[in-house]
Length: 371
Image 1 (cartoon, one colour):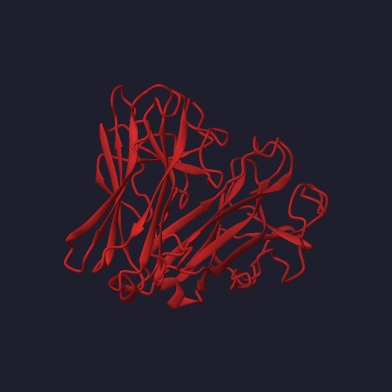
Image 2: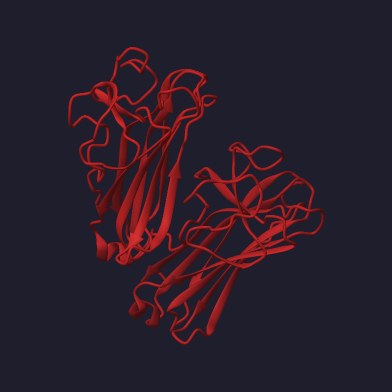
């Protein structure tokens, strides 16, 4: 099952487009500045043939003439029972861009909130830079998928337009979307933010807060595949379904991240008929022996560990002394009495100043009746 687009007026086509003059936008709340609804083909703006969405309507959104313009809308999420069971995935994105060689831009963020308004996860897309656009006026697509955190009840969508110079705020946005879809428990990944893609990627320094994860030791980094400087790239050996980011060990000799997963269908677990599948892509840098290791500890209601699964580390020799991530997997029966799984990533530095253990595309699935 997949929902329709949950974002209201996602391309500013609910009303007639203007010529760049600031005006309220139907379906959106103005938080800062005033946005503009611009008709494609308005002089100096994108046209119907400029790079952008194939399904574009008559209009798009711009930042008006404010240095900073923010629009928001809060969406009540459907499928709450499935969300709490951990079987709902989100798909969100939009077309973001700007004008010529100017670096005015727009950022789309989607924040999943609990019933009490507590942030549970954050997705940030953009801005699209002038360099990424090749110095041309246009819009490029940015997209991210992932698991909706259990307990989510609303999603707060925010558009932030930022002016780099001049008098017009030429960040542009169109064809935004947020959809939810259900997946069966046999295929639902129980690990939240399994590749570090819920939020922007950095350049190797420790990331202060990583949605879904708790820093246990040291300071783990979420690194963009576009960082360069010797880090893995989108073409480095690794997962075919990789997102924009991966995990690294930061600068500490030892870094650990953890999260606690609530296991579904305890009756099937106690019948001894539930299978687990654990997978991870783990690696490191060149011939250095820094490593990453994933562990999953199955625990009973009292917190006692019943069994532990450990994947990795992947050694430099196994990687052929090349920068790469290799997949490691394990399958078995979930111990009777298990109620949670403690997932931990451990990064270990063998030398130097950077902890170059890498991890991505982590997965924990359980299959009732599949033992």
